[in-house]
Image 1: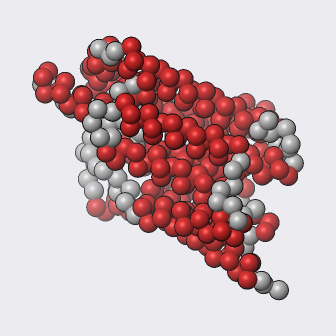
Image 2: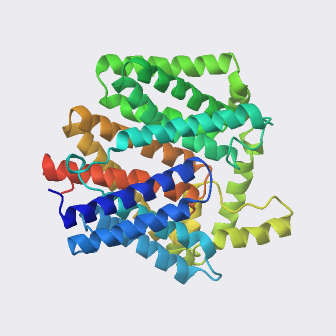
Length: 402
C-alpha cells in the first residue's frame, strides 16, 4: 500500500530526475536551459531533506567535495582585485549537481531506471547534431560545430558520450546493438568534424586508461582496433585528420597555445610571493591578460588553455596542490573499486573512469577550468562516481572510502 511518505519520495525522485535530465540535455545541446535543471535539482535536494529530516546526505566524498568548493570560492573572492563575476556560478552549480545525484534513491527501491533515459538522451544528442551538420551548416576549417559555438565543445561531448555508447553496444543484442554501433560511428564523425586535436588525444587516453582492466583477449583487440583506426584516419586523411596532426607536430610553436603559454608564464612570473602562494583570484587572468593583449597588440584570451597555468594564476600553488591531491584521491578510489568489483559493478567503474579521463584530458588544453563548460559535465561524472562508490561501499565492499 502506498503511504503518504512513499508518495512524497516519488515526487522527490521525479523532481530530481527531471532536473538532472533537463540539465544533461541542455549541456548536450549547448543551450542555456541548464539553469532550470539546477533549480529543480536544488528543490529536489531540499524536499528530500525534509522527508529524511536531514538536509544533506553527508557522506565523506560529498563533505570533502563541498569543503573544497567552499575554499575555492572564498579564496577566489578574497584574492580577486576585481569582481569574479559569473565564474563563481559554475562552482555553486557543481555543488548542486553532485548533491542532487547523491540524493537519488537506490535502484532496487526506485521505479526510475536511468539506463534507458540516458540512452534516449544520447540517441537524441547524436541524431540532432548530425542532422544539423548535414543540413544546416557548411564546415569551414575553424567554424561553428553542430549546435555548439566552439569546435572543442562538440569534441568534448562526443568523447564524453562515447564510453556509454560502447558499453551499451557490448551489453545489448539485436537491433539495439546495431543502433548503438551507428551512434558510435556518428559520435566519431562529430569528433572528426570538429578537428579538435585535444579531442583526439582525450579519446586515446580514455581507451588506454581502461585497457589494463580488460581481459587479455579483449585488451589486445581494443588496442589493435585503436591503432588500426588511427592509422586509417591518418593515412587516408579522413576529415583532415592527417593535416591536423602534422600541423601540431611541425608547427607547434606557431600554434596559439605556444603564444598564450609564453605570455601566461610572463604574466605569472610578475606575481608577488603571496600571489604565488594563494593566486590572483577568480576572473583575474581574463582581466589582466586583456591589458597585456592591448599593450602588445596580440590576440586576447580569456583563459591560458592549460589547467596548470589557470589554477596557479587564480588560486596559487596552494590551490593547485589541493586540486592535485583531490584528483589523485578521486581516481585512486575509483581504481580501487574497479579492482575489487566484478560484473556490472566493474563495467560501471570502467565507464566512469573513461568518462572522467576524457573530460580531464580534453579540458586540460582547451576549456577554462573555472567555467561551466568543464565543471558542469565533470560534476555529473564526480557525482555519479560518488554514488557508485557509496553504494558499493554500503552493500558489498566495506573497504572502500576508508
